[in-house]
Image 1 (tube, one colour):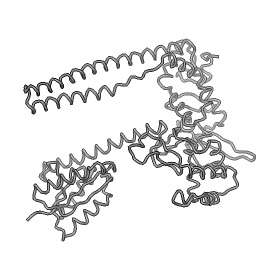
Image 2 (cartoon, helix red, strand yellow):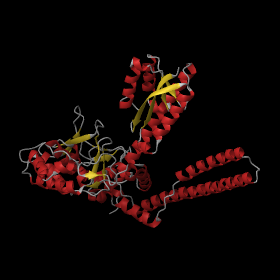
Image 3 (tube, one colour):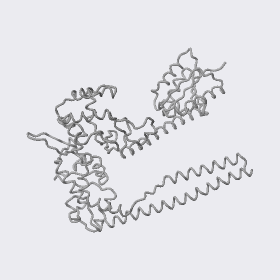
Length: 515
């Protein structure tokens, strides 16, 4: 009498559904069942679902099916154990749960028994699946962060935007595009909000009157108005809460920044609760620290009798010893940037050192690529020799296949190594001129940048560990980025002015400035 089995197949990527991956798994599992004396009485398909947890509909149905005594299931057959679970804990727990009914989990492509060695191998396979899944997650996260910093929005599009194409593959690396019908309604909402005479409820009602509910599929509500009005995405500034970063988007904004700020101020200005609004007034937020307790300084906006005041103050409630007016802090910060300006002699020396080193890197990379290309040519010639040897019957088909597999493996490794070597070509004169201009105009550049994300990026590139605000309301450095530290070292070799610790403040470097 044949033993009874059920088959469980799964793919995590919806694109795999179309390329018959599920069908391939089903055939392999059916063949395994036939060869090992099992009758397949039911099939459970999981399409486009990850196996990182057990919250899967088909899996739940399978467990219920297996636990019904009338079905008399002897085994669950899977294509690979990582189709069953990509969590060591979950995979073993599911097996233990089924074993209470005398049901085994069998892999159609992995020879794992249920003896002590087999159980050990199962644990290794589950752990490998979990490691692979977690490593993919890290790669995906890094790729998403890289795309975000380049100006590509990687998540669900905000209301009024959509992906340009229907397929996931075509949309890779593509920025969202606006939906004209919804864009017009959203623009009208911002313009009306900017007048300050409409409440959130009135704005939602006017959006629906213009057909928002018909186009979007659900009615605009107060929550929807708040969600749209708080999102800087609509004027081109993307914000990711996960990484607490801003980035200028490559998509076309629906409205201009000024309209957004006025509308936002009218709707939420009285409360001043939203970090996104604070950051426009406090660009040093997150980088400015209290010298006494080394805590990050936060924004403060107390209201006086006649006006509102804006400060940076120590975020440590036990300290709160330092507070500085926003305008004064920005003036001091620009003085600090100005103090970093090197002399013409130092600039020439720095540019020479940096570009000489970069030229050496490029030349070394070119030599390595040339060497790899020679080896690739050698193996390609060997591959042709194998083909001729097979034609002349010097090699048997088996010998030729093994030899070609060895050569192709070498070629693959060489091509991977070659692709990892990048040579960035540049116009040396233009880059040198830009570098000199950049170093001589840091304060002016910071002031002119109207993008918050670009200001913050410039600050982090120069002061990676932040800056300190002193008790006498001066701003000084903690540590400079490597390039600026090198310039500082070269400057100190020329003019040795500063405090004993070598900490740079605007006043300590006046003699080293270029007028």
